[in-house]
Length: 168
Image (cartoon, helix red, strand yellow):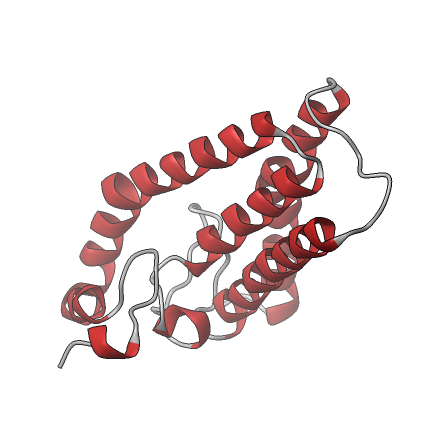
């Protein structure tokens, strides 16, 4: 098993490349192209937007930490965790890392008042959804078998269940 330092380095490189592009580069190009505007003042809408961005980035960071420390891997599909991660935010939704990225994108759309970034956020979510259904879940079923199948039955894919919606 690689050292934790090496895993952290790989996880951070992946984060800069993939989420960095999705959350930073592409919305930046959209905004720079005149399809949004930088707010002149900070009001309630901007505070909400910043809270969504911070919450989404924080959720992603929490998941990244769990992938390295609990799973012994990274979010990169070529270097996945060797152990199933079903703790922390993964107790409530199966895909909190993706939820964090989309939440941050929605915050960016609100902050920069950009309908194009909002549409982009919806497209990113649809791409995540398709990837999860067509690639990720079948791969995890094959790798983790019955324990992943139980996890699928207990934890919703995208939105946490309310207290009255719990199984069992």
